[in-house]
Image (cartoon, rainbow, N blue to C red):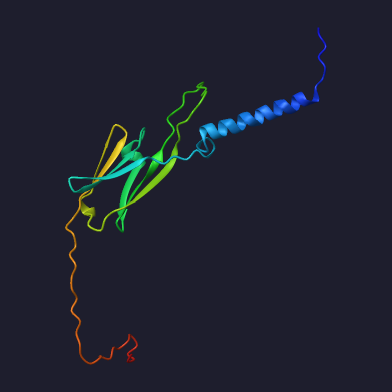
Length: 159
């Protein structure tokens, strides 16, 4: 058996290498490796005069995991990407898939016909088609001239 001389700097160098490896992994994999939030990618474009919103939702059951609503001309796609069932005994070496609740909001044009919106899901892609309604024309409001009228308030006092 050979004797090895103790080197106090060797432990410090090992610690430095471990710290460098930790930083390398963090910056190579990015903050998503630690924050683990998921936001689906969305495309918004026009097709045949309609507004089309596509969201990539792989592994989602559209009947259970997605809700689409419109409030004040804001299209809201919300839901949850659930972790698939893991078999007992599975040992993951690396997992880059992200799971959890998500929400995307898209401002619709004023001319959107929100009563005729249709949504479909095929091969992991949700497509929402928003038909455009008739454009609202400018309307001229005539101004009446004459003596100012007294207006009664709710309490009956003149203003």
